[in-house]
Image (cartoon, rainbow, N blue to C red; front, top):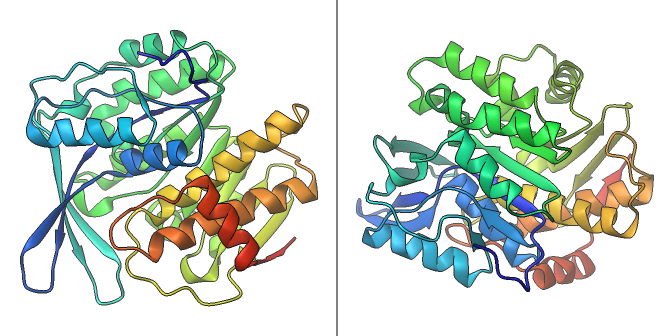
Length: 332
């Protein structure tokens, strides 16, 4: 399972699928994707030892997914393929580059897993410090897989990260979906959500920031990242600290597929690096300089992603180069 030369720091669990991305001529380009898949690649490409926990299919698409993860430096907890087919997502882009999704996920490979298997794989990697899930893993049909695993990881002292990343258009029972997403967020130490996610969750508040503060207080998480599209992003702590960052130079957006995934990868990469340098760093009350570095690293990661077609996560070197060349504004 584990390369002995790789120090695994984060385990990820959730969907890995094929995005069929619509073109202007009506045809579709198949691209390897899925929010958790994109995030997993993004972590590894930034130099973090990353363990992907879900099985992948023996079909052609599954082999391609596995090959790309391994090529990016990801360790597969389940390197042996399974017979279930690969998940599919049809992605149509609007004129503004916003993606709209339809998913085909019955009897698929990445869902052929149990909470016990996820936990066993994590226990077999003693250097893990963090686990992360979200997006389609938060569907109520998979509650018995991911909620017990997240709870067990938190009880074991791992930092639990949950990305809300809602897909309401493909969830037939929206109230059940909201309840399950909120149940997962309640188990998190770190939460990431967009302004749109907060609207779908019906969090009360006059603004996205008001809603984020309400969610943070309700979940018991220590740290929350709120993405605001072209308006940048915020970092909030349970102790009441707040930072906001935005690009000083407008970014030329090709499309937004994977932007949130790369943002979260940048955030957690910087967080892990800060914790390595300062083990006493507290999630609920980081020092100002560290919080600024973490948020700027996340913003640069997302900006590089949206400048490319599809999700092509940047390397750590690319992120640092952009931060030097195009400094963003952070206030707090």
